[in-house]
Length: 288
Image 1 (tube, rainbow, N blue to C red):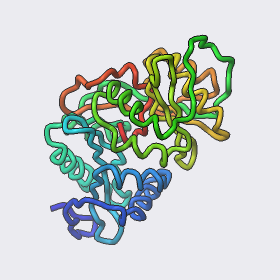
Image 2: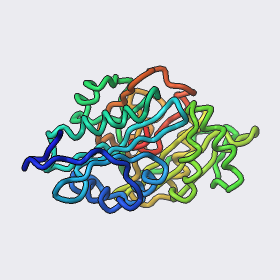
Image 3: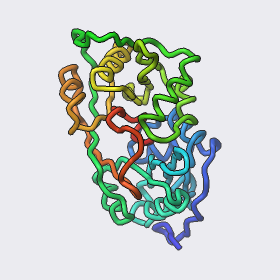
Image 4: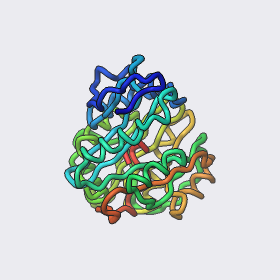
């Protein structure tokens, strides 16, 4: 049985609910993360959040499992309180999550600190990710196609879900249906054949995250991002694959700089479904 530094045993892992929101926010602050109350509220509603109570009060640790149908899931917000570090809680939480995920392929964004644990649990690296942040500088439009973006309407949701399922390869509808309320902006890419992509922008305390961005090609992704960024006055964040050619150099040319590098890892079948080339940014690194 795991115990804290004073020998007090930790209780079993339990499922957290909205009544635990304050404790989740406090756990984030304990590790120097932004509180992100709105994101925690969303995760507690649409995901399975597992936690361990601390013998001295509050949460000793937490982790989030988000399911996309039966065959794909993601891990996010893996946190252990600083005072309870190196007690085996991180491994216990991850083992509980993987047991709950069953046979599903599970993905996550790993920091250098967490990567050794995930490797021991059978996760493998599939690519890199970098957070590009800064104040977005608008440039001259370069795309002369007939594509344009506009604010999404309620009637666009069915098309958004169709576009996303084709690109992502699994059902994210439970999460995406909450985007209009969660995000500050939601735009769709409109072509002669209808909606071909979409993107959202949401605030995370220190910046506005642009994600997800789902588009047929790099030019369309750049158009969606630029149109969203035009309505953002403060810092912008894009989580991008730095090894893909379509966006990193463009982001730098518009005032964003890579400030953090993480590793995208997978547990299970590494051949992810859908069309990954159409996925340019995640909703959040907590929702890989």
